[in-house]
Length: 341
Image (tube, one colour):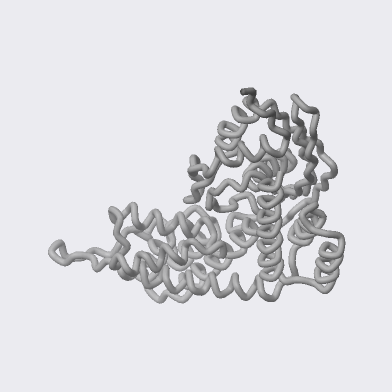
């Protein structure tokens, strides 16, 4: 008995069935994520097996210069917004399935477009086949910008602590408290000025009698820290700082450091939450909502109603919630369409 031939959508469904989830294969700035290379490593052999091609065409792109201040000085990058048309082609039947996907990439002047294209390909495949990764969105320019703002806040707070010191011991303690800032000129200058001579400040932890152990945080307290670190409001540099402390103390966190870290994390998350609740949605978010509403999963009247809501304005927090809602509906209806095929 001959095996019945599959149409394009049935082949795509078979690929979706065979790639359930991908493990994270790269680590950067304490984030683990799935690389584009790993996605293609799993998808491309299946495309070859079923005789499918994925054609990519740039529909539009826009470059915007981004100037901002960081803890290490002024910086300029290019934010590239790109819309790509991905077309699935069944080489056996000639069938096609056209999809448009928007993506952003922010990087150095010569890498903006490359970041956007890489981001688009990776996330189109992950979202199209509903591949679970639970990964951190390290490419999101908005998170990158929030991280820079949060890092600046930490730097300013550290300098204020230095200026408030009244003796050398206090200055040394503040210097040791912020290891991630030891190469930042403004922080070094503040410590040098307070201590009259930077070389006179001995960067070492206060000595403790050999028989007196350093009090450390309990596992329950460390879990509190880990849960807060998962918030997207926490900058990468802060995660690195906690990781460095654990490395220096062989996996432990001194109780004094725990109390400081826990307080700062709460302040960062409170600030980030307030910022997202009060700040208008970014142009990237608005554009992504518009792209989702244009998806064939929505009827004309649904798309029209969605655009009417969009016209009234969203905050960053509301836009994030709306994007997740739309993506959920697209996924649900796409599955129903595949099952019906």
